[in-house]
Length: 239
Image (cartoon, rainbow, N blue to C red; front, side, top):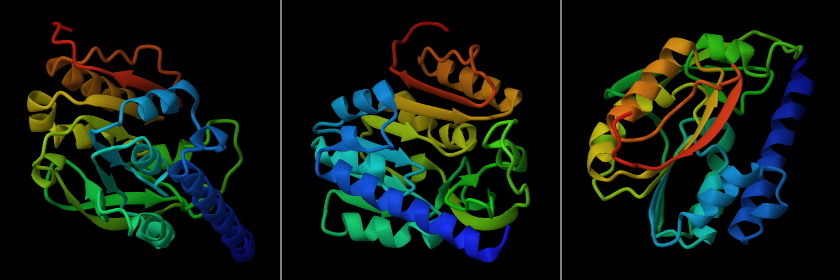
């Protein structure tokens, strides 16, 4: 892929992200092409007067929905500021209830290697397998990837206030993120909006086990190998 077309792809994504975030902040998220059906609608309905964690904030679309819905506070986590940083700050710097965290989340404090796909570097992935197959088996993409190192911390270490809602869409990083949020799961029992992308089966099974231990009825048995969205609420049952 030539540099010019790649830059055009990046700019197209940036433009779409800026528009979607602006629409969401104005309360018009339903008019955005980024809307993801009932998943997005339920998220909007769950944020009023709540403390919301947005893991994988990207351009801030879901953070903007939370703000417009009346969230008490929003913590937006997005390490890929090379692509998203100016849009995030341009959208949220005037909102004192939005805190931007420009680093990754994991189960430990240190560094983590994430994969960027040069044909569409708007997205980071937790593993090369996920990066290579992100668009599904029938898509024809340049499969070259580059590794970027980011600072990472556990969510339990960063957030000290009670958490009501967690939205997590991190291209395969969901397992390590929730391993680093076990105190929050145990004490706060937040409502979880989870999007899985092509996560390997062993990681998917481990994430399901972890969530069930903490009282969430996670069931990823119908995962089609590419994409699954689900909304999970604590029910305290033995899963």
